[in-house]
Length: 477
Length: 108
Image (cartoon, rainbow over all chains, first blue to last red; front, side):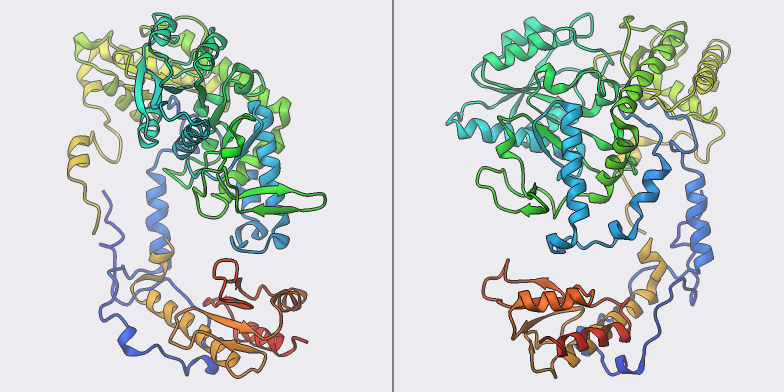
């Protein structure tokens, strides 16, 4: 590995430059008792060395801009450059969050229009862009469900039903929101086990969290029946919008019977994944729940937009100012540029690509759910366990071939699970190349399994001790 | 990245530059009749001023000159009527700060 930036420090070097001081400023100095006595532990490094250091680090990263990245459940699609370009306009980047409403009318209009556009594609009535991540959106949506029940004088609804194949954030968000998580089984066809659901739904049920298509990439044929079961018991149906990419403008969560949902903008609407942030996870809801949306809210008047900071029924303020404007701005641009027809084409091509890949990988691996999939699919990579090769080994070997690995060991209900999501961004040639690589790896397993079990071989680092890294992290220089 | 670009010595130089520009504006404003500097203690980059004229008139005047003069404090602190929180950064030149001072002088 290369040296860290701290190890490259050279006394006397520096990158910074500051505006020259005029004489008028030179008379002012802070009192000595306010000054720190020791210098910060920061490196001294020239601008060219700093630039090279981070350019080199960027070059050894794998990202959607450098490699095919079929990471299931993550929707690693192209981030259009036009969005990045427009989001850098000074009129967006240099706005102060406390600026008076009359000076930020353009931004407020974007917020209002984006909520409206998201409502159109989701079939919901209103929404908020405030949550700073999909998981925070989940938490807010669940808080709204809880607030509604309490507003009805119902304090007994303490249970949140969650499928056993759910994204991990679902039970985490529900627990944080104060609910007891009740797991619902998946049936042999990969859909929610309706009988199990019926046996667990009750007057204690606050809601059911569901993504459709689910994390196996399968669209539920009984979604309306599920909605009816939950609604008859007075619960709400929560839509985890992580898998929205596959149904854009084909079917709307609101029409399926969902009451409230979040959207991971970094998935469906192409905002950068960013290695963990900044993010944005808008929440949309139906008429029944909209009164509980967080503040502030942007209100459209006859000729202008204003920001409403007070609302008695609202669950309150959940983020600073207006959330991550620069992130959801990119989603706004993405939707404007694609239009409703374009959004539907995105979903259709994403589903087509996934089914093409699934068809070919089924020749190499066990496919537990052979029916048509939506945007992603699972394979069960246990066929080669006799040779000692696991899903993890195949994922590591893919890195040697210049491909990022699929999601592995999720969903938890599939043995040696590999979850593939090619997205609409990829060409047939890329998918064919990937199929060839997978075929080659399977040949390697049969001829020389050690080669796969000891992968990766041509990366900057070999196979890492992830347990040690997690248990004994080195977090500071 | 910004922190590394400034580095060990740059961060300190940046802070001093910021301090000096804020102190300059604060010092100049304290000599004017139609505004009172409320923050009398040492401050780093921002301070509170109270205008003699109604704030709406003050803001209109500044906006006419394409200056955003500060954050209105009365919304959050009811006792601070006609007060603005003025923040100065290292990016402000003496010309810009002098324009601000001139704007205060010419509030009708």
